[in-house]
Image (cartoon, rainbow, N blue to C red; front, top):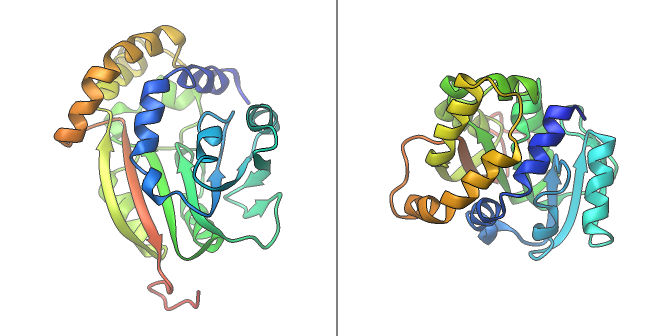
Length: 238
């Protein structure tokens, strides 16, 4: 794992209030056998264990090692590649897939979505969090390996095409979008550092709850909750 990505993940692990707030947005869909796709260093993995039996994988061996230290024996963690469809487990289907800030790192994201569908039981849920708005794409995105920031409607269309029904969609973190623009576009920083997170933590408990009252028209991220259809639009048998 490169230095910028590791620094950003370690900094985001300190954004405790934001992480809890984000988790609460999809906690109702966490149940049964849960798979975290691209667990990174395990910022969310331990919390997922409160809702069901957890499996988690990442493409990076160092990330897997860090996650294993955090969860100990409370989750099954190993190497995996969602683009290639290669995982440390075999012939396993899940009730819920959680994919947080991962799809933007995958070159062939359409194939990754197709593989996610195959990992779900019919009717299973996909929790997808991705960065949005190309206008925010800056030096941080580039240095931590983002291929893209998504256009919300284009992603929704593709998720539907891959055999999912959209249950909910919402933009998140208007306040963070301002900070991301300043840090990555104006200041040309290459990672999210602890000083940014300290400032973010100071204002998050005040500003983020406002988004629960009035949905923002803009934000750093799009949260999609989708259900696997029994058949794709191409009438593929489930």
